[in-house]
Image 1 (tube, rainbow, N blue to C red):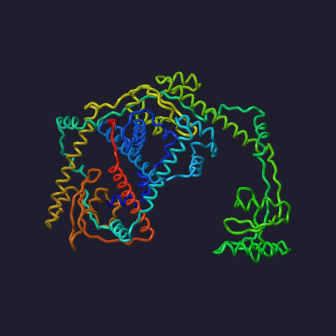
Image 2: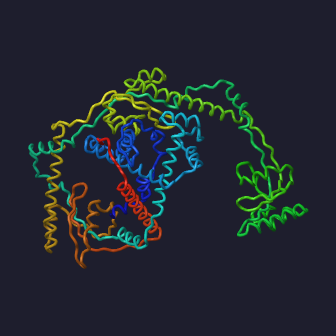
Image 3: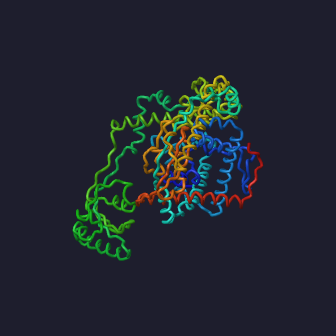
Length: 634
């Protein structure tokens, strides 16, 4: 439990919640919103079907996540049917939980406004060109993913509603001061330790490993001696960089565009104004009456600047007669801006009060700087870049769509797709999952290439959008499965393993003898001299002093009972590298916690409590739901 606290206290507490609670939809890209397809169901939740295609998509997502977490060891585990079934069941559980949350948001009538959905879509980098939302790209990417804009919006709306529900759950958690104090005391506690470290290799000299032992070990652990699966791949890549390099503009394209869009290069009028502000404070009616009195005085000839100095609640501008910086459109409060730009002549004053979120304004026009159109020479380079980018994006979308269509219509070869798009087929040499060449070294491609169903089908993949500027279709050219290495190839390795194991056993036996003598009060000088070892000087260690002691040794130290006064607790632990350590634990002391750490620990506790609440909510929903599994999860 304390280890869980430690992980949370180091910063990723929020990640615990985000990983398990918040429904993510941006990072996976548009492809995660593919339609479900197919009539067969993997499960039914309160009458709502979860399609087998949705399950397959979730399995791919979870497999990619696990592979990135576990690294090289994942490939061997994935070859085990039991492990694959476990992942598939977990993926199905995730979909069931998501469906239950969606049904709960529907029951609670949680809704997300169109403005938030629109703002989110406009901000998605997938749909932007040069940092600006591109409607053609938006529609094209959705079409490639088999969705309409309306379907995409509704999917986002559902995800945001679920996030609203889970946010309410997460943000309602709290931690008590005494909980924080207890956690701080445990986490910051220090223990005094002397270590006797005996390397296991000191006992390896006389060890003999027989051929029979090697054979038995090989037969019992054949899974440890596997070659990596390998694949060679054919692929077609649509790359914006290559497309852009081939685009040539006609001599007059930029100027024609400039002439057709001169309004886009017009600098609008600027206004220099002064204002008098009467803030609402606690009485809006009184503020309005005061502002009206000031306006009447101005209309009767009173000096605007003097009244600004004496009566404006904007004291900063008031000191300068109410004068503000030059104004451009779409910067100020809309009501203020409309009134300021409606004034025509220098010296004009608004005839009525202008109400903004800040209070009531009286505005005076001081000067006007007329707008002008930027010269073609000043914007020519920007226009040429824009036109090239637009053509490149259009051509990219066209090629990506055509590639997707042809790869699907002729699934057993890339030849037709290459002919129709004019893009070349690239073939790779055999490679393993830990030596994947670019541009195939993307987790989505890796999870596809080494998927056993994909390998067995021997068909083209769906188009995979690597980024806004690259899309790819891949197919397996040759596949070599994982195999067991011959005993002759691993004999030396097995001998080394068995020797290390026997040496460790001898070291443990030796340390057991030393420990027994120490507990009996006997002298152990002779024993320590035989292995040329000695106890380290006592030092204070914290729970996370991994530079001073092995991880397993520290874990053992902080699990030992507090020793009696003037005595020592003694225990033995094998380090991660196989060496054996005798721990002599003598004393405990607590450390103080500062305010910053207390705040961090309080947040950690809240995150852990919120995670527990979420899991409890899901379990409660599952118990109350009617969940059936028409299809076997295999």
